[in-house]
Length: 385
Image (tube, rainbow, N blue to C red; front, side, top):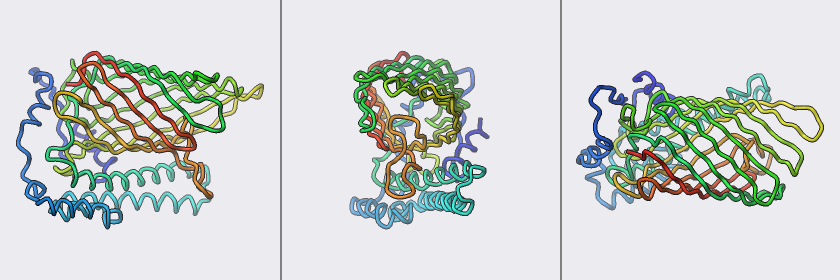
């Protein structure tokens, strides 16, 4: 497990020595539910330069994180006196910029040849993720309160259901409003999930099933308690999307390796924030009218920066800003001027907040070639600990 955590730090932050992995408690004596969270929130804040900084210096650090921080990530932390964290963020930015140059330069040199484009796209998206995550982490670190905005759950529910409404604005298609049910079933490190989008004003439906295995990280309450929210898992998924009124359908099978790193491993000022990355490939078939089945391959990397909300009690949850490179959903790819139109994926903002032990809300918006919004009511059994 320690090796897996070190690998996750290397993939997500390009700083394999920056984190201090902590294994989940696997002994016979398990702490009471929520003990880790209560211990963390009751402990005094670490002695950092941020604790001692005056309000004016914090304001200067926040401004520095924007300008010149947009170009030199970590500037806000340097101004705040958190040089070690600042250097780590700057190094992450450098690694990300290097990967973007390699990816885009390689695509230009080889003319985006199908023989080499897959690793070049993955390098470009990973580099963009490291660049964006280090920028947002610098801002979060100088603006967040002591101890961070929230704490990760030590465990996840056995069952979580959702029922909501979705809205898609795409001038190409007639659909607009959707009924969106879903369910997650978990047993320790295993997860089975199902979700659907059913158009209410058109003949259109998207059905998706997922199966995942988590190598480490928060599981169900009957398993070992997680020390933080970091995880690494592999996910296989099957999606069928019917455009009945438009006389075509798509079916996709995919596999993804994805993980999350709590950024407190990078520096104490980043407590309460996290970064996510995933790398995957999908095989897609589609049929139009009476034509034969056609095939295609998709690269589906993604990344996100987020923060936990709340330490104890309610409301409690998390929010994240994310990028999805995939083009086969309702938001599809970004529509931008020039040759790059349709190459990039879409951006999204998602928040999952529980208002009590069992009931919560999920809000999600996406912007690509179409605009997508969703609001769902959540219900769980065996809530976060």
